[in-house]
Amino acid sequence: MFPEASWTEDRLREEILVFCVRLGLIANYHKADRLSPVRGWPDLEIIGARGILYRELKTMAGQLSVDQRRVGSKINLAGGNWSTWRPADWATGVIQRQLLQLV
Image (cartoon, rainbow, N blue to C red; front, top):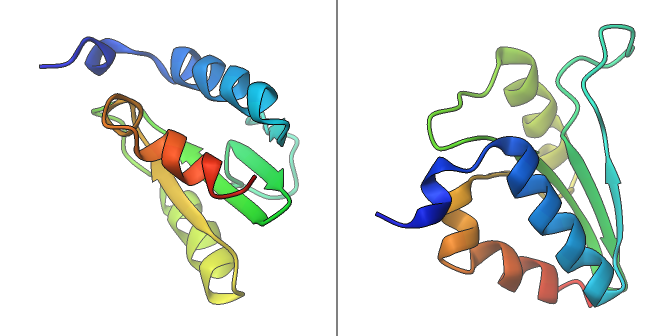
């Protein structure tokens, strides 16, 4: 098992945001808010010269809500790039590779 398996969403987000700064990407963290008019909006929006990623962050055991699945599906149907990232994706380099594609 990899050490990142025990990471919280906050720890995963911190690692991603630091990497985004190093790459010169614009990253916006959308904190879940009960007053938000859009339920299920992704945690991160990341903008680079070659595109925009919308990413929902989850722990290894975390589950997507119905609203998160609905919003993600609509983003992808509209031509966006939505997906879920988990600590395993950091450990295997999936997240880093996807971010590097935006540079």
